[in-house]
Image (cartoon, rainbow, N blue to C red; front, side):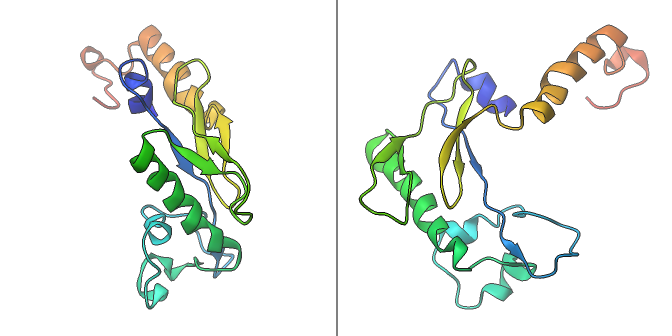
Length: 156
């Protein structure tokens, strides 16, 4: 998110969140949601044996998630073809109009949530992001805790 914020005034930025949570094979599994790079299973062709890939803990290819590849691929294909990204608001109904994926800016902070029903949302994880982007920098500037001269460096 910091990267999108830094570039928003300098170049066209289109921000998205892969917001689909596959059905877990074991409800007690410690990891929830879509793990790192699992979205690639939806972006490329379905593998011959999904269990040999990243889908070891979740049922990635279910009836509910059948729409995800067409949504995900459609958004990026539209972007590559036209430079003006659009998406189908109801992928299960081919005649539905396309909606526009807005350019990210610091005022509206709009992004595309890619799921079985994609939609444009505002301020991704606003409370969590505020902790890292607003509160901690203010705390650091007042306490000097994160400065290298304090001998209490948490990170550099």
